[in-house]
Length: 154
Image 1: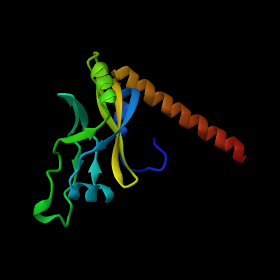
Image 2 (image 1 turned 180 degrees about the vertical axis):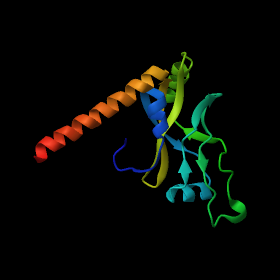
Image 3 (image 1 turned 30 degrees about the vertical axis):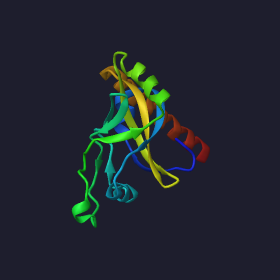
């Protein structure tokens, strides 16, 4: 996560579903009513993903609720949005996503200096047993922290 940024939305499902290999920060091309809805926190990243098409990166299925005072200028909530990355980053992503099993998933959307930025992750899908191991490890860590806290308090 980048310092000085306010996180608006997180994709918790992404960390459960994918092994994260690398992360990238990208800008998003938005309309006026979309940024207003984002500032209100009316956004959902749950089923969204990114795709590279003709040398450009696009974010699909990100839901931004229509702005309440937007009237006829409102936007389509799940429209495809262009992501802004440098050419060398896009070329790196093209090479990595062509490998078997890699996909681009958004981890979070944050505001930095008034601009909406998305934290993209290059992830490889987890198998079912990997997910179970992750949950078991998280539960064991939680139990260990709880017992340590009890010892410190007594």
